[in-house]
Length: 204
Image (tube, rainbow, N blue to C red; front, side, top):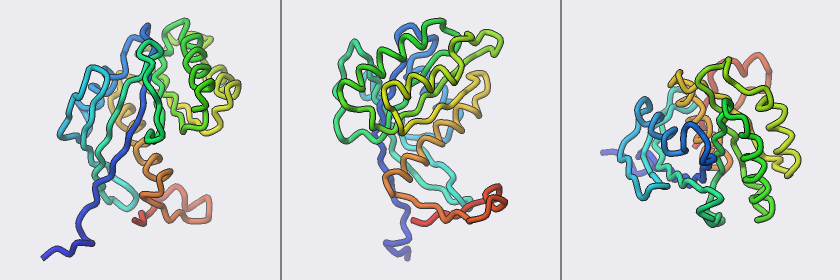
């Protein structure tokens, strides 16, 4: 008989996402791309701008954990309230759109006014064709905006939307790091730099 301590724990994450109205892909479009290739179940479309789902991700020494993720799409037009239950923020930026930086500037400014610039923030920049990326959308300019509004706890990710593995890898990265930030999982990471290239073990 399985001991209670041996049962897999179910983890819950609440994530706010945002994509400008002008983007080629809306937040829910990108998540639908993720659902098509990732190991997900119980996908529940709560509203046009909210979805929850279960997914299993591999952590550390080939261990799998199961999470319930809830993504709420926030836009300036909807004036979605950001409460204290939010675990992180994911902003999808279209690198092929000429005014993506302008749209990002507006949203970051709005968050800063609300005092939410301390939220862990991921900028997921995406593209379909590398040759179509606009020159002004380089990572340095995105980082300058994050610095301008003092988003010190941020990370910039880059995804080719034609390579589904890249999208899965980056969304799963957000899930894992958010679990770590909530102290739900911890890694036993070796001290030497050489060891960092090998597998790391999970402590729950």
